[in-house]
Length: 114
Image 1 (cartoon, rainbow, N blue to C red):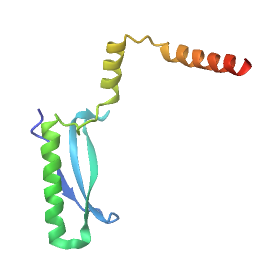
Image 2 (image 1 turned 180 degrees about the vertical axis):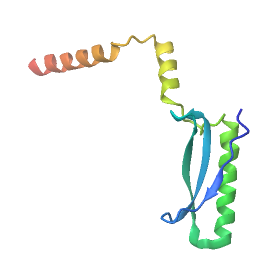
Image 3 (image 1 turned 120 degrees about the vertical axis):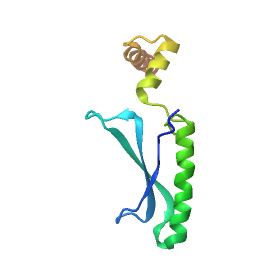
C-alpha cells in the first residue's frame, strides 16, 4: 500500500476548473522521476473560496482512493501487467494474433466465394 501518495490542488490559468495532481510511485519516467498525473475536479474556479473548499474535498477523496488501491485508480491496470497476466492465463504464443487474423481473413474469403 502506498500511503505516501498525496494529491494537491492546482489552478491553471487556462483551465476553468480546479485540477488535482499527484505523483505515481509505480509509474516511473525514463529519467527516474515518478509520472505526474493531472485530473479535473469538475469544480468551477469562479465559485471562489467555496469552490476551492469543494475541490479540496474532491482531492481528498481521490487521495484516499489512490492509497487504498495501491496507487492505481480502481479498475485500471497497466498494459504490461495485463498482458503478462493474459498470456499466463491463456498460454498465448507470440504469433497467435497473426494466425487468428489470417484465419479470419481466410474464412471471410471462403464465405464470400461460396
